[in-house]
Image (cartoon, rainbow, N blue to C red):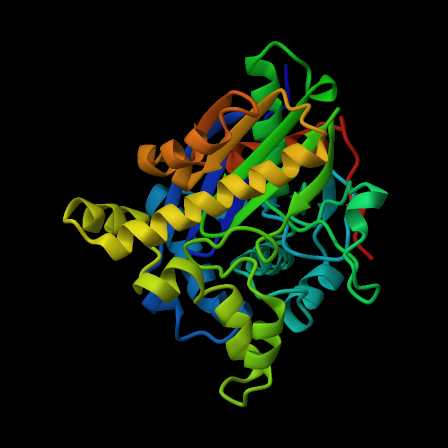
Length: 356
């Protein structure tokens, strides 16, 4: 008889926490705990949201009739860490301490391994991350930034992007290892990646490419330096301008794309300009990745929450359709991909790396 494993999946994002329980590949339940921008604006650092997010996760499980102690393993979203291999890593004290006390960047995903480690300590359950956001397969060319002190690093929605690239390749009858796919993840943050022959060889991170509902994206460097030294803002405030209070939140006072689309329907020209400008920048980013592939692109995939917006995907597709066919995969495959990765570890198909 086949072994059955029950896996708790924890996936905090900039505007929500997704919680799910899987029994092997089957999803028993999945819930999205949403947060308003003003609700989170009171927290200066991602780690400060720990108590709120952890309590909401436990309350959600209780409402659904589950307990953490009943789980065989915990799958946590991979947070920004020093470069990682593709695959699974054990969550331990070193990882939790790094994300709590010395994070590479301020992002809600930092909380996933911290909370998972707490649960592991409380209930004696192993916890893992899988295909973390710093999964690094960049080519040597892609690492060169133009400033030796700041080499380019891989920082993107790797988990969902790799899953979306595999689905994109499959849709045209190719194996992931034989296809060239450009993936744009359209969420609270936006990242874009190029997958060549099964390797995520170049990316645009959320501070290198398009602005997003909460992120400023790429901004003019000289003006940014002047603002940093203007005396108007401290370091933490500037970081929040880059991630959390930038992009649509800064322009429109909201990170809610549906609200902006409603305003466009009411002839709000500013709302239209801001939303279309974001789509315009996404299209430019896709073009960058296509050039990196010398124009040899088999498929473009749009994924993430905003891929469900016909208005936004329409604006993007009109500008990039000449490169390759566009496939929309609305939402995210992160929950099932996290559970599937950890399940392979539990079954002994893959080994988890130790984070040091």
